[in-house]
Length: 153
View 1 (cartoon, rainbow, N blue to C red):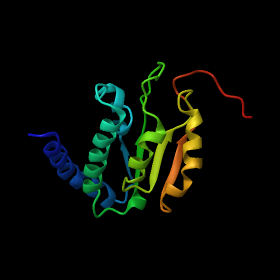
View 2 (view 1 turned 90 degrees about the vertical axis):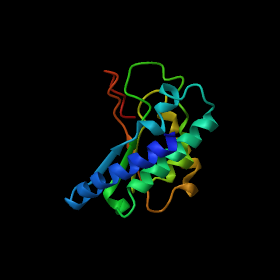
View 3 (view 1 turned 30 degrees about the vertical axis):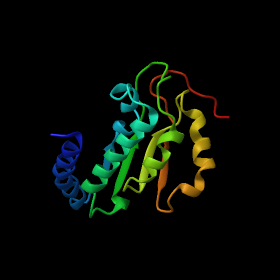
């Protein structure tokens, strides 16, 4: 089987689980490290553009699995990994931004407190016009990989 066939089968299998969760009255949170972390963990031999195509295919599969579910009941968490390390191979938010905005979830949760990504709030400021009206951005503001507490200012 091809990767696309695998993604399609996975989306079909997960769709039932997702519907069951939402029909039970719960909110569905999906952790999607494949949309950022996998850039340097699984696809480090690809260019950023090639990775973005793969991430786009993952979003298509995810959206297929979420078909018929109210996006207001769904939130998606993306991350670059919760490990102590330099994170110098992390893909920039600016590069995955457009792909992330296509996810069929109302809320997008993302890391913003770690030293490698703290500056990326500017991506959301600079590309504000590209953020769909129905999206709620939820920044992660606690870095659990350090024992430092930032000054409130």
